[in-house]
Amino acid sequence: MRLPRPRGLPIFWQTLLLVLASLAASQIVTLAMFVVLDPPRPDFNRLGDVADALAGGRRERGDRERVLIVQDRRPMPVQAPGMTSDPAFTRRLADRLGRPEAQVRLFFEPDQRASFGNDRHRHGDRLVPMRRGEPLFFGTVTAAVERADGWRVVNTPPRPLIAAWQRRILLWFALSAIALLPLAWWFARRLTRPIRRFADAAERMGHDPLAPRVAEEGPAELRQTAHALNLMQERIAAYVAERTAMIGAIAHDLRTPLARIAFRIEAAPDDVRDKVQADIEQMRAMIAATIGFVRGSTSSNEIADVELGSLLEGLAHDEADMGRPVSVGRIDPVQVRGDRLALARLFQNLIDNGVAYGERVELSLIREGQEAVAIVADRGAGIDESQIDRLFQPFERGDPSRNRQTGGIGLGLTIARSIAREHGGTLILRNRAGGGLEAVCRLPVRNAGA
Image 1 (cartoon, one colour):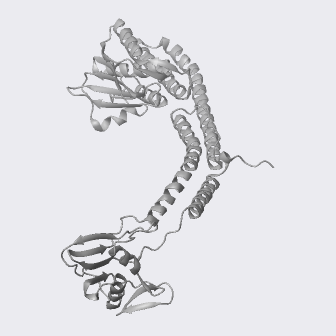
Image 2 (cartoon, rainbow, N blue to C red):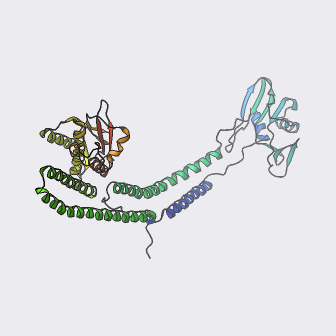
């Protein structure tokens, strides 16, 4: 039985393995630190250490973190707030120094922690740890001995902001994090790479139902989702193809009765024949436009690099040759990826719409970051803001009448927006300053993600 590859494991098991691996790595680092480094020790000073410092002898040891500070000064030291003294300790210190008790001062912070061993010295309600009959001072200590020129004073320095044992713990955390970073980075890459590819493929399918299938790879959950998405794409494609075939069959079948009607009205009076013939031509145009809309939204033509500026300039030149009022404004050199024929149809529909309702049309192309912004502006009367979105609905026209002389059948903008979306772009209408309407089409620039 073949075991699944790590990249094919479900996300649950991949996450669980990462947590277990992280825990194991952290424990390994912690054990290594315990073995290599010395354990933290209590920071204290014995009474003997204080006596040695006052006598001018040894005052620091290699295993001490808080080295006693020795100073010579004239004023007699006083007891600081929070500190206390013990006559027995003062007398013992004076005996070690060989000085009268009146020439010795000893102040210390009381300590209620458990003592080392069973030997304890009680000072009031406080406990002072003792070891082998010698007091241990874990807090601040101030001791002084009187000399001819003043007092020699010994002080415990302030505690460091970060003690040695705290630095060790921080070192443990740092080493654990460093050990886990490569594993976490590798896991994140393995987990997010198929998710990104899946999201990109789903986005492409949203714009084009005939886009390439989503790759069924990665964790089990993503493979199942990709498989379901591919099945849905196949059903949608089959559904659209079936409806397209049905509309094509209906259009084909309508040709025969329309031809018979056109033949039979030849003997009718001229006024009746002309009106019926105009209705027949309108029906033929509506059928052709509807079929073009349905087939255009499901067609998959050749995709290539398109120089959008030259495409717009070519359309404007053709329109000018036919005597239509279409001019060119600012044109930036921009390349997009798409179907040249479909893009030409997009902008031709916008030009036709602008000429029909806005008299004069101006084309412009501006690059904004990683987007190509093509603007088809006219000088018409504009339109109510609340009615703009309605114009993109099939069979909706700017002119509410059904007069063929004032426009098409209401599919031009619908087809244009559909083509823009198939190319990963957007198409909106907005009223322009000074009067008129402008269609703004945004398309991603070629290699925008590079």
